[in-house]
Image 1 (cartoon, rainbow, N blue to C red):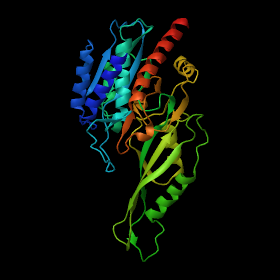
Image 2 (image 1 turned 90 degrees about the horizontal axis):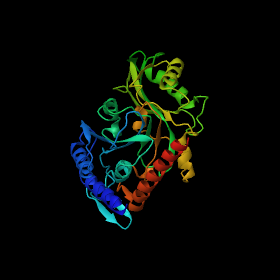
Image 3 (image 1 turned 60 degrees about the vertical axis):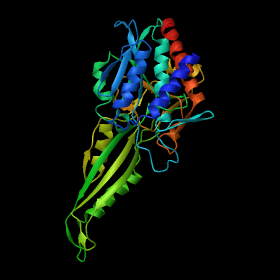
Image 4 (image 1 turned 30 degrees about the vertical axis):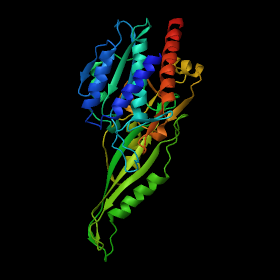
Length: 356
């Protein structure tokens, strides 16, 4: 186990020092593929997605997916360190992608290796996916059809090794309020800005009645607005964008319909892909985690869970508040804890499955 943890840190250091912005993860994909082969496994690859199945894979068994992503956002301007230089100071390992989600990825990969040759009541598949940070179509969404049928997934993201059993979906709506152009000196009852303001006021005040026990209510935010070219000309159109975070108590389509019915503007959803997700609190995996002292909560942040049509839980080492932050870091002890708790959780879940 000690050697396994050492290898996890070595891989994380190499990933930090290899830029892997979304859509440009070729080199980190190569690193991960080489690392998997060094353990004696035979990974597959499509695009920049790398996956591997356990030895002795049995198609008659259910399959548990272990997934995290290896793409990163671009470093923000607040960095005081080289984001692509791995540095270890005490218990901290610094570098872009260390917390989100490198620590989860290397911990899950080492967990997969440790358990892959053990006799278990289900198969294991490890997937290092691309384009998670932009919810891109060449990541999980592209590769799922190539994997064995998945029955349950553990998605590696920084949760301090607590179980995020619900996650909000995302609906981005582009709205256009259409009025009538005219001179600002004359009366204009069809000012598109005022029309947009009425809709924005409704959005700011309306509350969807059904709340999620873990994620609360639907949250709507107008995050962009654009109108007009000259001070003396009333614009014919006002454009604004609505960011909507949706718990599992509603579908994206239900929320869109409600907004559309209560507003004058023309609305266009960018997609209905990024769906809310949840795992029953009574699920055996949740119970296994709670028995190990893991807390249960709902996550407001988005992950590849939104693209997965099977039950998932979000779980990983690190703290979400460090994600995308300047001078990103993760604790070495968190990686060690991650590997140990992933293994204990899966082994207990396997035992409970056998007993059940």
